[in-house]
Length: 448
Image (tube, rainbow, N blue to C red; front, side, top):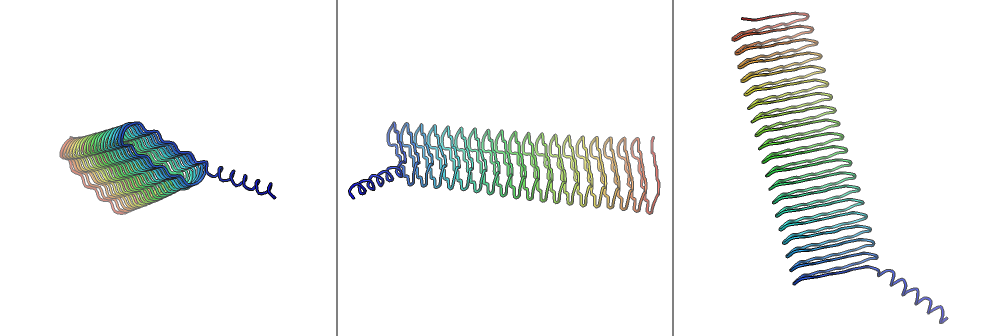
């Protein structure tokens, strides 16, 4: 009986020893440093290294096989870590003064990293779920980074170099990826992801740029690249498999993309200052692109339906271009070179085609098409020209060309299979053609 009692006592001691194998270390060099460590569970590791003066570090662990580490080099830094779960890993490295960092991890196998170099930087990371990865690197002063992950296998990274930059990332779902890189002063980036397999990327180089990315759905991709100052980019994706890209190089450019549906694509490329581009897509497999070079150019594209295509290019100053498409498989292209040109395309129906080219200044062009398989083309070379085409029906065709100044053309076709072609060479020409019915043909040439 005595041997049995001795054996049971030994086993109990071994169990107590095994359940208490947490490890905590503190190394302090300097004055007025504070370290607090609290561990509940098994096989947790916690490390604090403090150099210099008046640093504060706190670690709280619940669970087992968790790892936390804090390294503080400088003065007046604050770091806090909380873990509740298993196999989580968190580390904070602070070099400088008056930096603040916080990490919270719940559930299993999450990884978090904060690196701060400089002063008065603030970083905060929240992870709830499985196998999430988060990193924040701050170099400079007064940078702010916030990250929240709720789900599985999400990846988020923030890199800030400069002063007073702000980055906010929120992920709710699985397999999402978010990246923000900021270089400069007072840049702002906001990324929200709700769903699975989404990707968002923001790169900012300069001062006071703002990027807004909101994804609700699955497998959406959003990219923003900003170089310069005061540029604004906004991307809102609601659906699946959408793609949006904004590239800005200059001053006070504005790009706005709104996608609702499936497999839509939108691209904006801006070089210059105060250019504006808006793209709205509601449906599936629509494609829109805008390229702007110059000053105060404006483009708008609205697509409702499926497989519509809109392309607009502007080079110059104060040009305006708009494409509105309601239906399926419509195609619109507008190219402007010069100043103060205006171009509009409106399409309602199926497989309509429209193209407008303006080279010069103060030209006005408009195409309206309703129906199916209509085709309209206009080209203006010169200044102060006006051209318009209105087609309602099936398989109508209109082509107009102006070479010179102060020319005017108006074409109206209502019916089916009508054809109208016009050419103006010189200055001050006027044409007006109306065709109502079917299979009408009109050809007009004006030359000096």
